[in-house]
Image 1 (cartoon, rainbow, N blue to C red):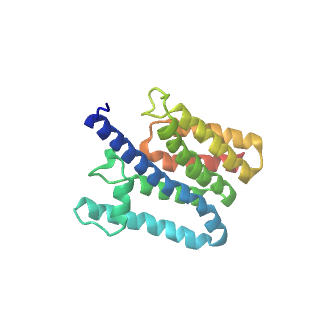
Image 2 (cartoon, rainbow, N blue to C red):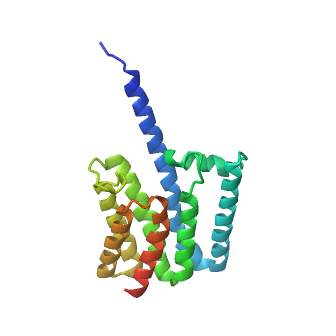
Image 3 (cartoon, helix red, strand yellow):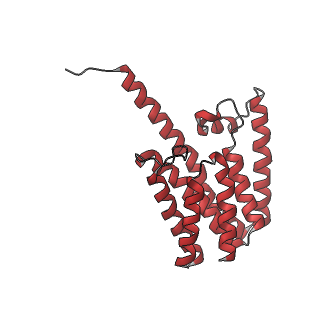
Length: 204
């Protein structure tokens, strides 16, 4: 005889919603891997689009906080928002664009590619690995997991090596990226990861 427990069903439903939101949110992260290719073929246009995206998103969030929803943009933001972002300015998409923009403007194109790919794959896949495989949490990191940190290291190493073709540089960048990602920086790691790793790639 099977006994149904409504409380367990609710917990599983909430967990599935969290996982769905994380997959959707990080799919946006992963899409940023195309930016280096766009920069290569249309540098000024891509820079212009990044600036437009940052300004437009800021305006839509300001309108949303005043109860005015912007079709499609507000829906996507709501789908990707974490519980901590409810009723607040959702910083994630803005810091993502700003991190890519700062990295692009302040680093040479090859180094910028390293930083942007580290953000796309390292931070993006780390979060997914942490949600699906992360049973072992790292103390004092705001919920970061060993599985997420390991995935971050591997993803950044592989992407950096593909760009630089140097094992020593890729290892150093991956270690640095893993350290930044594990810090409880919330959405501001979207700025620090591409900028710091891009600068690191520039001088290695």
